[in-house]
Length: 382
Image (cartoon, rainbow, N blue to C red):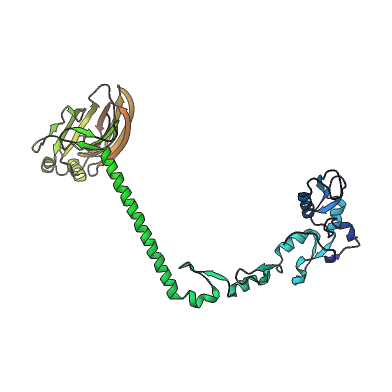
């Protein structure tokens, strides 16, 4: 309901108060939420004076030079508080007589205020609104299963079980088609990403060159498969291999490992990587860049203990002898460990192995702190 002044005939108990002195000079009804002009102290309904000021900025209805708002005079507020007034919805059946101060709250909640039905558009009393809309034939309903919107009166013709199930089926087909399209897009995107990755990291083992799209950086995974065959023995990795200097690191063939030490971390590493060769080291070893003016990035490596569980491997990265980073990991015989490092701008890696307890399945003579490396991923600046 739009707020306005209260007609004098709604006042039920004036207690000897002259209601005429409490009227708004604009709407001529009883003052409601009154404010006054600071110059003439005339009270007005707040809504009435605000409307007046929109049409007549800064001008008082009583011709004061400038309208300056102030609180209603206290004696006016006191007289208003003594009044008891019939509810605005008395004509709709509300029997309540309310004090002036409680009038706004009551009328905003009154059960006799009319509300428009969203279906038939009739004005229904608030107290009857729920029951009316619950049964109104023109009210729109929405099925939670098929999302069809229909009027209650049309339920038997527009929302039968068959219609509902048919609509759900069409929706599922549409969702399935959309999901297939999304899957197709993701598959194409994945293929493009894979091709892009390959274009950035292709190693030509025969020519020992790296073909990359990025002219400044090449990511290379070393699996040792291009080393000479050593089916009957183990050999040291050449001192210069893949542009790196290798110190105290050896390699062996899978057939040799299976034949001579079947219950070891060597075989475990072969089973996990599928390579022909794996590298291994003992106690302390190192890999460094061949050129003294260049650096590389140690991205990751896969390592496994050869004979001992709880074997500690400490990896140290250096540049010009200065310590760049260090990392210690515990290795086991029966499961390779992927070690992600991503150390940039180093020129040397130092490996140190120590400790550990001999695996129960290992030969009693196998008491070495050997570490198996089945692959090493580095980044080279070109």
